[in-house]
Image (tube, rainbow, N blue to C red; front, side, top):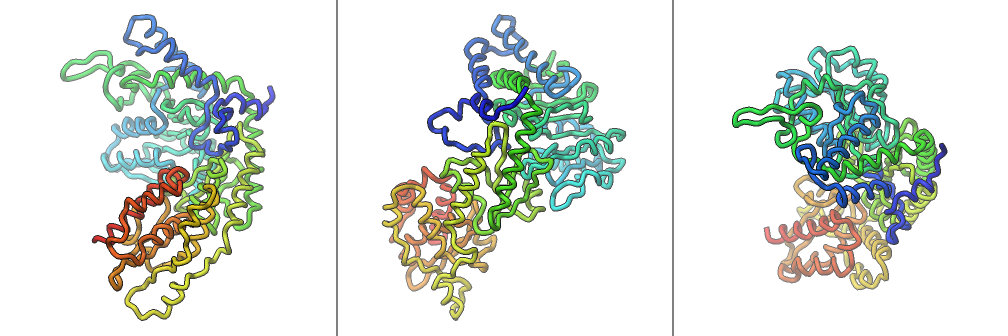
Length: 558
């Protein structure tokens, strides 16, 4: 077989919708788009087979049950499991990891140890933290270099008390693959349980849990072209038989009386309640779809594309790449010193380029790398070089809008140097900001540029960058201060984000230097809506503006 990215993309109907024909979708590490066969399978289930499974005798229930168990068998083959009894359906990888954490930790005693890494998604960190607190367990971490686990040194943290090792198969934040072969060589002869969070692997690699050698493997279908709401847990059959179930309820029992219950056989003892049956139908279609592809050719194509992406990004002046294209699962992660990551993502969204920004639910890793947020572009096989070229063009266009990396201080900030007042900060000079000029801009892009230019009047104020002045609810850090002076209210704001500074300038242009009754929150929200900001900014960014408004009025009336 051969692989054609263009033909592959044509099987994904989202891209053929009128509103999405120009979409560059580079947020695949968060979730992939779905081929038509997956969408059709979900629809077909609800049209022709919708019924609950296993405990009914009518034909719809028999058909639904048969579908579920066929998909379970296909999932076992997909992951290289020895038996369908080794496959548990969950709502996703997060639920799967919580299942394993709760079931495995019940057999541990105070002082037993669990080994994790700094690169874990929060879903493979927080459950272990919760259980460690509950049972008095000790969390230890693989040695790392700037957050990247050095798995060849894992023996340094293993001890006779180590009972569980749970690590990612590949970073969702920086893209690097974990050296699973080295882990197998180190862990296979030890009396412990080894879990691999394979959420990022299945879209890019052919997974074989026998070759990996792990005891448990977890993944989510929506990461590899399947539906949301369905995940897979693989566990060695012998180990699963010894594990207590996590959740109780229907389907996971054989009999119940008032004081005790008998649990069902594998794998149903771990599947309490009604499964997401339509999603399971979609998962079956997804596995069949991937089975028809030349997976090796897909991997080679993605790696070529990823190298091109890193090469183009490396040519953008000042841009800092945190990811490396070698041994990478399709992710490029970067920052730029002249603007916040969220500013880049928001600008790209205006050009119909979808990337993700933030800590990517991997805060310890990013903190160890020296950052709190990055822009993440993540590829799969329906992406193209044209997508990458549009991404780079969008970034370069944004940088052209920015002035030199050092913003000029406002006149008010200059005068503050000689101020003898007790205050360490001075309001910025907002007199040249023209709200009507902003209103009269013809489109969102022009308004965005204007707001970015307004950010220049907001000087950096190190003295107010404290926890006390931090505004809760803003997507990027923002600090707001207030005082009363000669019968009017004075404000100052600072942020690492240009667009937040611009929005802050918009807000303060209406409330700085006015008396208490001169303005009210509804008027500010009305201005925000009139400018179309509520439609164009993300919900969290719009909520951030509202959080600034609320904080300003809280300060005024404190």
